[in-house]
Image (cartoon, rainbow, N blue to C red; front, side, top):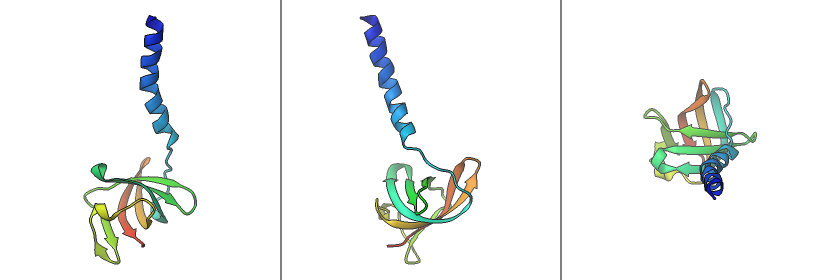
Length: 105
């Protein structure tokens, strides 16, 4: 009985980790990319962008990240899943820092 409890507890800890690993992201070179917002997480100021060349970028906004639509600065809540965006990123080690995000539609 004790081994079943141990197995269940182990699964409770491992399954979320496996799920998190299944949503892999890509690290690309510094540059500008177009794509679609795959997921937006407002409380973390984080977006995932699926690029036109099938890369998935994980971007955490910094205090220096600019977000614009039609040349005007907008707030993070203007981002929505499915929107087309252009992102300018800087590769820092294995992390991508978004310099600018432009909402295209």
